[in-house]
Length: 239
Image 1 (spheres, one colour):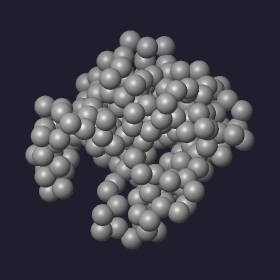
Image 2: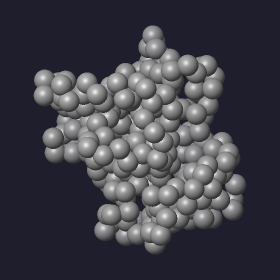
Image 3: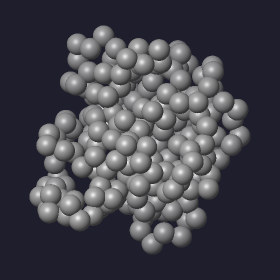
Image 4: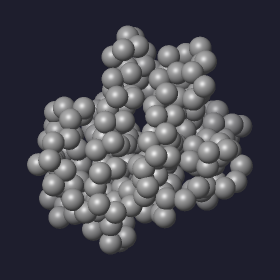
């Protein structure tokens, strides 16, 4: 059985990923890197919450706690709205890249799953800050994977994440999320491809985390074989 690392476990995607990982018979341990306690992990023998304040630094004592891990699902993130680009870049690119570089030194093969988003652009010419920064993070992770034997990085680009009937994130919905989810039921029957059920995103993330690190084939996968657009996520999730 596998030991995986999860970040962003109190957010919408991360909380679903955490629950899916804890319920998976293929996973024996989930190390959760978090700035604060994670109530959803309390009392679960599989879960190990590691309070980690500086996501740019992974000292030897921390890496020793992560010994044996073979994958990380990076679901930590924040909305770009109202943020300065340097601050958003630190959270969106600097943090996951620092983690990936550190985890690439762990023994054995390692898969790094980065929850990106629809509209990310690796060419650096996106008009929106979100697209530029997410794309730069994706490209840096792919570059790392191409230079480190046994290390594979996958970029997942969900569109609108559908929480389903139950909001599992610890934080409360923001005003934009409330408005989005209020109109989503009217839109989904006509544009289901623009949505990713959060359970599907979690399922696909774990499937890739536990996989062999190889390229993904099929429609809506970029030529690199490791960047999956929303239709590819839905397809891998059986939708």
